[in-house]
Structures are given as C-alpha cells and as structure tokens.
Image (tube, rainbow, N blue to C red; front, side, top):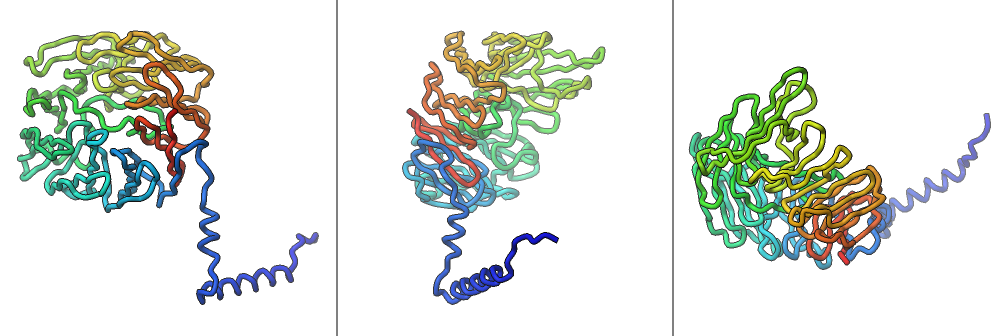
Length: 433
C-alpha cells in the first residue's frame, strides 16, 4: 500500500502543542482562541466604496432607516445603530419591528407574537413614547399608525394615531374582525408590491395611508374611509369574485371558468357614492388566480398605491389608474413590468431596462445590456436595479447613476444619501453620488 506521507512523529508534535495551548488558555496565561475565531469570522468588504461596514449578531429579518438610526430586526430582538458611524445605540427584546412615519418624524413600532399590544419607540434612544396593551394587529404608514384592538367577542375597534405626537386621529368599530388579523402589517385586500427578489420586500419603506382601507372578515370586506374614520361600505362577494381596495375604489374581479379557460372582468365602484360603478373592463386579467382553468382567485393583484397591473386577452401587460380606469402604460408582448409605484414604472424588454414616468407619459431613462436576470425596486430616493451581482442606484426622473457597485449583498433600505446593503451578517452603507 502506498504511503499517504503522514508522519506519526509530526502528529505527536501537533497534539502536544495543542495540549500546551489548551492548558495555557485554561489557566488564563495566554488564550489565542478569541483572536483566532475573530480572524476566521471576519469578512472582507461586501462592496467597494462603502462609508462603513458593521458585523451584526446574526442574519437580520429586516433593516430600515428611521431618522438618523438604522433599525435591525432579528427573530427575537431589535437593535439600533447610528446612521453616521454604525455604532450600536440601543437594543430591545421584540419579535417584530416596523418603522412608521418618515424622515425626522419616524418612529419604531415593536411587539411580541401571540401577545396583545405594542410599543412605539424613539429611534434615536429606544425610549418608549407610547405603549398599547390591547391591540392585536398594527399597520405602519408614513402618516399614521393604525391598530386593531378588541375588548370583547364582537367589540373590536380600528384606531389611527399620529406616529410622532401620539395623537388619536380617529377610531371606528370593526365588529369581531380582530380574531383574523394579528401582529405587524397583516395582509389586507389591496395591491401586492411588485419587487425584485434581490432586494428586501420592505425596501420602499412604509407607504402613505390610503384614502380607503379594506378589512377582511370571513367572506366580507369592510371599507373604511381613513380621512374621517368611518365605515362606508360592507361588500360580500360571491365565490367567483375577489374584492380589493385600490386608489379610492372597490375593485370587484370576476373569474369565470368556461371552455377550458378563465374569463375575467373588473368593475370599479365608489363606496362613498352607494357603490356607483366608475369604470369597468372586460377581459382584463389582474393575475389574481393561479394557472389552470378553475379560476380560483387566491391572491391580490400587483400594483402600487393607486396603480394596478393587468394583462389583456392578447398577453400584453397594462398599467391602469385604479381611480378612473385610464391606461397609464400599454406594453407589447415582449415587455415586462419589473416594479412600479404611483409615479413610475420600470420596464424590461430584452436586455434593455426603461424608466417610465406616468406624469410625463413617456420613457425618461434607459439602461442597456443588463441581460435577462435583472430585478428592480422603486424607493422614494432612487431606482434600484440588480443584475449579475451588481447593484445600481439611479435618480427617479432622469436615470442618472447615483451608485454602481459589484456585490452579492441584498439592498434593504435607502435614504436621500445612500443605501443599506446586507450580506450574511455584514451590513454596510453605500453613499449616493
């Protein structure tokens, strides 16, 4: 048998040295292990040109910017770091965390799973600004914190609060709805954010409070006017219909199975005018059903604020104003909407990415040569485009490059000055040009 080249004498020397080091460490004479482990686990830069990079205590669930603080959410705790230098400034025990408000008026909302109540924290100090002990569900918006609390079986109330001043804006009865909604930002019948898988789902930050909220309960949807805090309509659609609230309208989506396919139609009504029909569209597929001919609608349409994404009978994508039914953009069969909000859409055709402005009704920027594997997200501060371990940040209206880095990190948050990226347990801030 051929020798593997192992020297028993050499192994004995290594074993003896290991014993000596272990004894020295155990007697506190010399302990190399912490330094050795730190050297093993220290990562290199996750992108070039970062302002700072910070090692975290674990893989984060979410990362957000609140004022001058970076809020990091783990499974059972929340930490805050200074945005300027990534120095940890406070930590708190919590199972979930959301940022409400915006800019200097932002706050952090935290809570525990399977436990009623939540806390509103100051992002710079972690001090409790307001505490609630009855709410089962909480929604965080730019201009409000909306909670749902129940004091009895059929006595639930939906209440809106100013994020920073803690002033109650309105409250309205919600029946027994609290037993089906819990924790932070539970799903409501509205639009789903269309966003790349290479960025965090919450990258755009908290949305503005819509003019109407739909609250699901059994087979009903209760429509709440958020300006006055009152119930304006209760809708109970049949089984072949799905109801969503978009752009101040109630959209009733019908999917009928016939001839081995699905036939769709959309009717938009005004709940504040006794359900008067405002617009309708036959043959418009809002992709609320999965593949197949059973037409079972099990998800909300994609969109952003008052804009909804649909497909016509010929396979062409179309972006529609949910308020009045106008076509904001009509594509061809080769064009695909990657992401959108109420002002812009990012559209791919081949290896070209275009930014389309609804206000100007035209393409306002383009990126060439990005290939097929590309994603995008729109934030209040920049357009984020991802492709082939590359992240590019562009201005919204003109497409000027604000940052372009090679990295496998995921983008979690932006502010006017830059973006937070995370790879594993490493977090970094990439400044915008």
